[in-house]
Image (cartoon, rainbow, N blue to C red; front, side, top):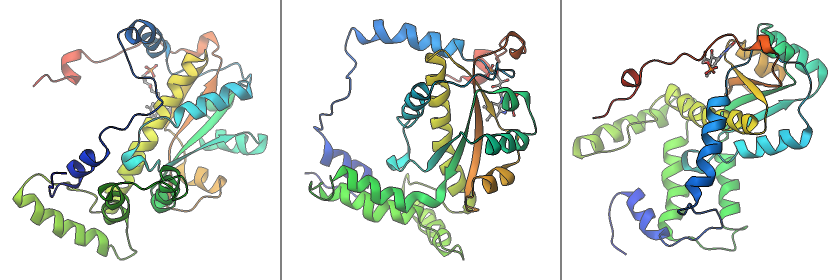
Length: 268
Ligand SMILES: Cc1cc2nc3c(=O)[nH]c(=O)nc-3n(C[C@H](O)[C@H](O)[C@H](O)COP(=O)(O)O)c2cc1C
């Protein structure tokens, strides 16, 4: 195997040839997948008034499972989805969503939490799953990626010394050539976790839409109250709450508005 000092390239070489059991898109895939995908994408609108009817449990579980198929950095899945089913907790959650009608009328509420504090727990669990309890050997570069590089990036201490050390290392490495530049502060760790949880939230909304239900992402809320309501530590942060259910006609507030293509998409 060719050697390189770029761990990502070394790892790519080490694992080339993997054949999984996923659907591999072939020439018929586009014909079957694209119409449904476009339909779900365009059908999804933020709905602010629901009829209050619950979504069947099996549908919710299917959608929540779909949400976990979202990609995540190093596959660490640093998020949790709290499907709030207890009626008292739901009431208090809707209150913490500032009493917005989307929350008070929803059939279901899911809190999407970013869990930057869980990188190590999840890393150990993911490694255990990948290696099937340590019975499968992975090539050294993969082992290094999970046990040397990822901890070097993710670990933080109370005094911020890990962040400081990374800042110095990245600065020196950056002078030599392309290198990662973060995380070097608490904000970077927070963004990292919220990035993964947001992808999961979007996947959940699209799955609910494809199952025939409406959603509303809610960011206008009291994050601290919700975190406390769920009994979570300070490092756990609410990314958003997703309200879901069946719309009332008045729940659609207006026609879809989007900026022109060229404002958002730059072909460079
Ligand atoms: C992170 C996030 C937070 C949002 N917070 C709220 C909210 O608190 N209340 C609300 O009514 N809509 C909220 N929305 C919905 C947006 O207003 C909506 O997505 C936008 O107007 C576009 O409309 P569409 O979703 O129907 O395409 C939020 C959307 C996102 C992505």
